[in-house]
Length: 366
Image (cartoon, rainbow, N blue to C red; front, side):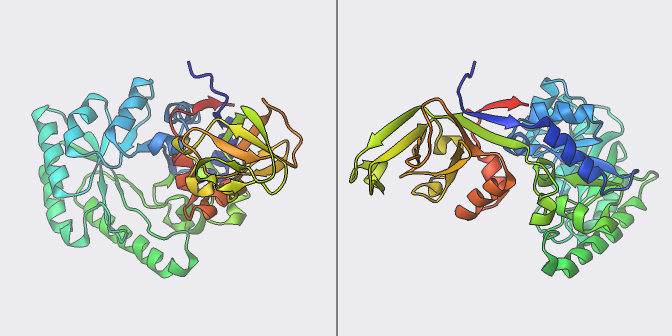
């Protein structure tokens, strides 16, 4: 059992708040898919999925088959879209009733062949359209061949056709985004004409839900917004932070003027100083670039800068001006602004801060 004082608390009330916020942004008939890949953006995919199942979400999405398998083993019964299924994992996808994204002719034919060999009918699959992101997906000049392939593979059931907006959060890319939406609309219509049923269509991510309400189609995909971040500060302020990283002070060192702290002696005391040691480091997801005063934690409601180099398992904090003792609580982050500050200081985005939190950090639903 992991009884470490370092814990990532997952706020269930914040989850419910954020879900309500995004549900208010979409039409009552629009279905909602929540993306819980990468351990639910660094939190706990099983715990999050159980909450979402109670909330009667329509779909979950994961990146790889093993993520979906973990959910099935935990008893999750919601439909699960595997965004990057990979041919090597197709058998596991069958075994655990997962739904693959088929994004090129190789994956389409390979999966179709397996379904036929197993004498299955109407196995649910999803077709990815490349509308301008230029990652996975069929291009417009593939459509004629794709239509013929879908006619031949009638034992597959296309549960959805989808695409991905490249810059829906960027107001300067509005024209490009609108063109993506238009292209997807036309391309998906072309494919649907081949079928005797109508699959779901989805292209909107978090920023798409906020900025392009006309692009809801039949379903939207909620990712980073679910975890508390909108496409700008105004929207983020309407959301609640889901993941709160906390720990406790392990020891306090009193050092004299001129003494140094940590590897390569990066911190040098300019006065008699008090240094708190806390039990997490870069192996837990705290970027080394946050060392030497760039990053901070909060102790007794006061900011305490990181002193010296971030170590693998330990960080030193300058608490010279803070009244505290060994065993006191330390807030590594518990607000979006703090996470955004970490991201800015390390030249990255909140996604990376959250997904970098190591699996050795204990998770707890609160």
